[in-house]
Amino acid sequence: MAFARNATMNANANPTAPALPASRPAASRGPRVRRTQAERTEAMRARLSVEAYRIVAEGGVRALTIRSLATAAKVSQGAVLHHFPDKAAIVLLAVEQTLTMAREDSMEWLATRGDAHEVLQAMLAEFRAFFFSDRFWVAMGITIEASKDGDLFPLVRAKVADLRTPVYHAWELRLVELGWSRDDARRDVRAAAQLVSGAAIRRFWADSDDVSQAVETQWLAARLAEHATR
Image 1 (tube, rainbow, N blue to C red):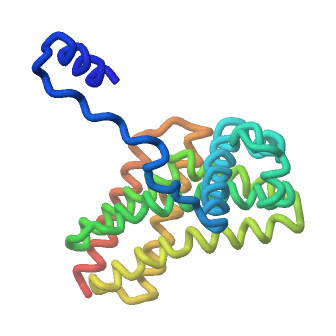
Image 2 (cartoon, helix red, strand yellow):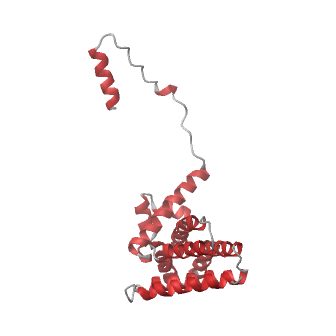
Image 3 (cartoon, helix red, strand yellow):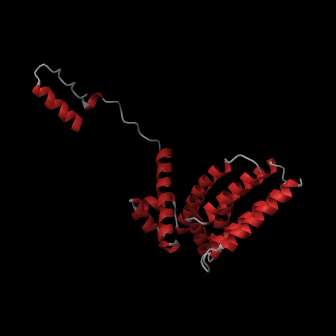
């Protein structure tokens, strides 16, 4: 707008300046592209997913209701219920959004190439990035709350497994590529995840110290020493 105003002022000041081209009439503009029903549905799901995650991250699972989600997404409660018929459905939506974001983060670490030391370091870094993040605590909070509901809990566990297990399998395959047996790869990925998740949970009862880092360093050295004998 400022550019157009300046250009108009310059043209008025100089009679010999060429006239500015007229704007195209609205009728000559191309037709507005309408989204399909499937595209609108997907856009609404994405919008509700982001808000469901944010609500739980900021206020806990109890803060997530049909009403709070509708308010946050600036839609009617009816619009929410059209896509997600009850509280259980939006809880599953929140955990799905949480772990989908975490999986996207994990893919960056999984792209690491190098020798055994570099890959193990990347795996530990990925686990730290997940277990020390809001993503993990939102998923954990949802799971703990869902454990009180005999119908919802199996659904949440299945959703977590569907979204997190592939990350562990991907790390197992990376180790197999470097010479690990499948059983050893499964053991070492599981051990690393337990090591880091334990350290993350411990933060609530004690400050981080050198011992936690020493345990991780010793575990890494032991895995590399074992790998060298393969």
